[in-house]
Amino acid sequence: MRDDHTSALRAFHLIARHGSFTRAAAELEVTASALSQTMRQLEQRLGVRLLQRTTRRVGLTEAGKLFLERITPALAAIDVALDELRQHGDRPAGTLRVTVPEIVLEWLIAPLQCEFLRRWPDITLDIDVTGGLVDLVGGGYDCGIRLGERLARDMVAVPLGGPVRSVVAATPDYLDRYGRPQHPRDLQAHACVRNRYVSSGGIYRWEFAQRGRWFDIDVNGPLIVNDPALAIRAALDGLGLTHTLEPAVRDHLASGRLETVLDTWLPPYDGFYLYYPSRFQVPPKLRAFIDFLRERMAA
Image (cartoon, rainbow, N blue to C red; front, side, top):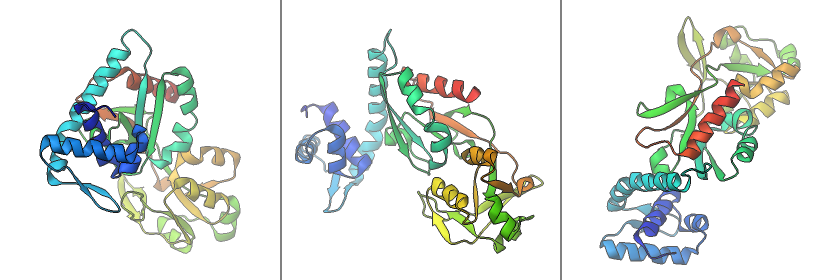
């Protein structure tokens, strides 16, 4: 690594983000020992300890946390400036880091990622899959995709496809055998595939609405997963009912492999948005991604 302040600050930012010298070194394509030496030199120059090293994890000291908060926006601004300089009069380029929830992978990201990269070959798409809200600036992300109801007010939000609705679905064979629930309370007599939140570890309580007021219920079942695709797979295999977003099972519903129940209890709600911090000018690589998604969602 070059022995300059910017490289050392970026190295510190990566170590803090990953909580690991090994993972940060792999991303920087240097050895962990070289990265450790860079951090020792940075701490010596600053005269303060930034990292707490243990045998299992690397954490931040109180001074390190404050320092990270101060330098992160500056590093992001430098990245934007460098991208704009490189792309002056040229095609969008650089690494675009995007955080998305698991539920949108199959029906939004996976079908479009290759087409986007073919259109913009100078962009590297770095997709991080996580269910909870994340600090875009602190995590080094350019943008994220989440439900509109979960976005912070200081974010610029671009709608993707309008309102969506959830469905409760199972195979016709399962419903013929065990009956079709008419009210959410009827789910207590059914096998339900439950979902665990990746971020908090809690189990999702199925949500419904009556006369515009939302409520949730706890369901029972033989399987708990933290991957929506696994829940859908279990429903397709006839294990029971799954509660998921309609776009995620649209093809299975059209083919008749799955059938929905309780539709009148599941009205549409605010859909997904691409969001990004409002404090920075939009770099060309992000503008290309936004325009591409809006174009494809409109089609």
